[in-house]
Length: 226
Ligand code: SF4
Image: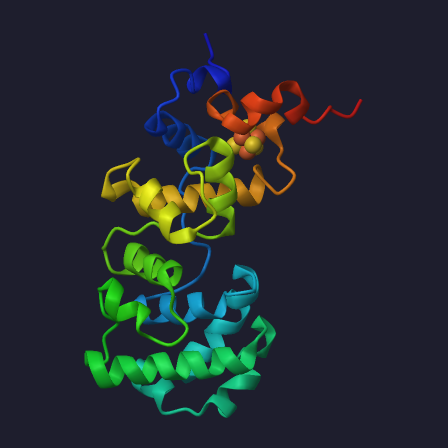
């Protein structure tokens, strides 16, 4: 007999919830386009207060012109500003990407460091950006926490904080390190598609494991249009 989505999540351990989200959002991954750790770092810095789609429209020409940290470090922020303007906050972002590239050249031999402390010392790089790069491009497990992760994880009942660092620690305790990056991507996709600010609980496969749904019950399900 075919199982409905709720049957899949009976038992509702964190592992079961993430297994079910994996099925609902197969092959979750960052939606930023990149070919190496340097490109992902720059794309992630540019994605702040922007959309991945907008960044993906901007970066091909940028990386064509500045294909390495050394090339980007040699530019001036003023030269970079018009090229990244569409991503918003372009003045500070131009300074940050040029400064990050310069630091990578000066301090790390032109290679993006595979180390959290070294990454967050770069201009424009916080823990979220560092974890994105570590997990996706450098083979170091990381759990990026953004606003989607905070919202969805809090609703499910995995975390009880709006502090990103504390949330990261609580989420990392739920799964083995090898699953962290994909789990973050899955929560982000779930937050974008289903568990939006106004959640679409009637389309959610983990609702029997969700504290928010349990608290609201049927009220959390939007009535279907006739
Ligand atoms: S049941 Fe609703 S609130 Fe809970 S995770 Fe799913 S969409 Fe979000």
